[in-house]
Image 1: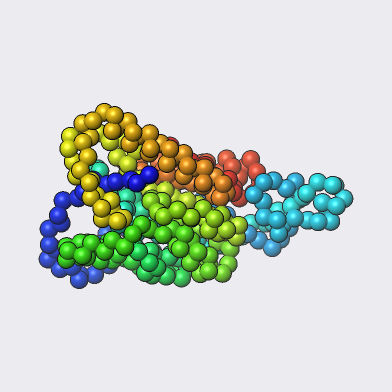
Image 2: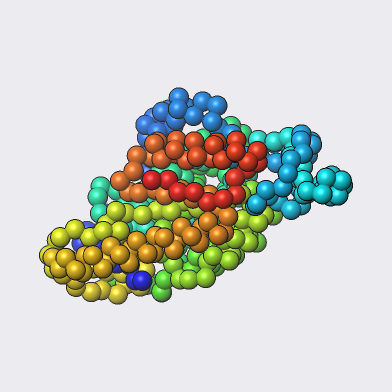
Length: 337
């Protein structure tokens, strides 16, 4: 299924395309600290451990093996005696690195309302990175446009979070500059499989990995994601816009594929066309959720119409319930509505 985004109007020339985005990153982080993080501080009391769980060396308990447990934690002596597989549970070490694998391809520029998917991505990354670094954890990032463009090793300071947001903003300015110059830079669909394979090679220690993408990509990313989840605790953060699921009646409108640059005119006044579009979108949604579930990762859906605070609180609540049910970090997929 080929998904289309509404063709954006031509961008007006900027007065200074080369101006650094550090000031914009600082303003964004300050706004997030006042409007989002302050609210989360009151709502996530005692729930911090559900956002990211570490590993330790001190044995705390033994329990029966459950699906998606790490086989390296099986206690073979106890398993032989009990004739049932048992795994070791270790005292949790809260200091653990988190990585953001950021898809900043052209398709995340789309947004049918006041915010684009790129803005939702920046807000989520800024909030999570600041929450984690304030508790002494380290965060790093792999920034992708068409290829790997920046690698930020894990650090645990506010300036490091600012640098991360600056890299995201710089990528947005670079993409806008290419578009205004008349070079659309469309080199085909995003290759999420390449991103995940690069991530696996650049993360030497077990970490929590947030794959932030709209998953509009070439096929073949499922196996690399599953392999990444075998070593790391992976959370798929899926960005989407409501218009990607259902088209309103707007008459004859031009649509452009944000990934390839291909353009087409469609008659959205045709009710049959809108039904076919919604059906294909629903089939793609179901296939995507099944793929994430098969890979054994948690999944968070972020809409451009979502309230970021409510989405993160629901996500923390989902993970807390799963951790209590299994007694170990969750490795099964789940979606937020």
